Every structure is written in C-alpha cells, then in structure tokens.
Image 1: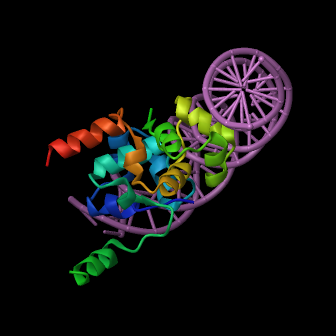
Image 2: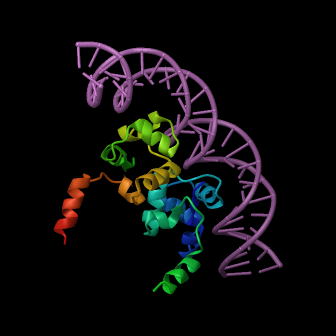
Image 3: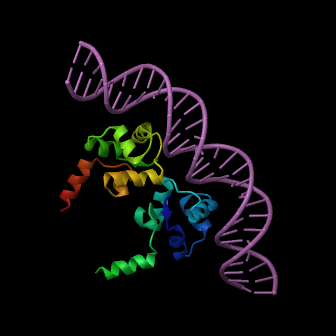
Length: 80
Length: 80
DNA sequence: TCAAAATGTTGTGTATATACAACAATATGA
DNA sequence: TCATATTGTTGTATATACACAACATTTTGA
C-alpha cells in the first residue's frame, strides 16, 4: 500500500476532484479512489500529479504513512 | 510511458535479474519486462526498487528519457 | 432554506502489471 | 570447448488501475 497526500494538496489549492482530474487527464472518480486509498496510482499518474502540484514525487507519495504537512513543517523548523 | 534506469543500476552492482527480483520480491521475468520497457512498474514496485538501489525515485524513474548516468554526472561536474 | 455542487458508493467493463511456464538464444566461466 | 547461467520470447492466467454510469449523501453558497 502506498500512502498519498492528494487530498490535502488538492484542497489546499481549492480544487475539486473534477478540477484535478481534468488537469491530469483521468476520470474524476479515479481521484476519489486514490484519496480514499482504494487503490494506488500508477507510476505514470503519480508523476503527473506530482508535476501538477509542483512537488517532488516523494512529497506526494510514500510507502510509509505521512506526517501531516503542518507537523512536518514544524519538525523542519525545529531542526534549524 | 515511464523511463527507468533499472538495467544500469542493476548491472553496475553486478546483479542478475534473478538477484534483483528476489531482493524486491517479484518474478525475475518482471524485471526483464521493466528493463525492456514492456510495461511500467507499479508505484509500489518503483518505491521498492528505488529503496533497494538507495537512490531517490526520480533517479530511477522518469516520465522523460534519461541522460546516461555518466553524462549526467559530467554535466553536474561542469556546473560546479 | 434550498438548489447546486461535491463527494461517496456500488456495479460493470477494459487495459495493464505481475506470475508463471516452456523454450530459444546468448553470454560466461571453468 | 562445453556446461551453466543469463537473458529474450511467447503464451496463459490473475490482480489491480482506471473509465464510466447511476444514484445516495453531504457540503456549500446564494
């Protein structure tokens, strides 16, 4: 199972699933499946999504559960 | 289509497809398919391979053709 | 408040990733 | 050189990613 941050990245940008789906050229329900963890994105779709959000792929997908973005940022600040 | 550097990364380490397949727990023929570009790895397998080779995932997989590792290293050096 | 938009759910169909087997071709090493 | 390992090829079977449709539920905004 691969974890992802699609939902946060999408809502942070004020996009609907339909908006995002159109941007990466998949069915809008596919975005829902990914957000709910029903199945994994293909490598191809993972790259498209990461490019669309302008983040490195491992910031959007990970084989291990993500910290929340806020948590991660706070940890990064603390480390400086 | 996603490009990958599995073959170079593998041969650089002196591994057979069988060796690599066992390390990431897939059939050895699957490695062959990936190397030949017959199909893409799943996200899950892509992460396993990148972790096995200890490279960031975008150093092993890319939606655009790779330069050779040698070329890329030379370019990096020139930029310094 | 109420209509429209967004999301969730269920179901069916198709394409593709992967397993596995058999055998051919090529490379490698004793 | 010759046996063995490695790789390529073809074929079949299965699991999963994705498309699409219909409808229910929830959220949102005028």
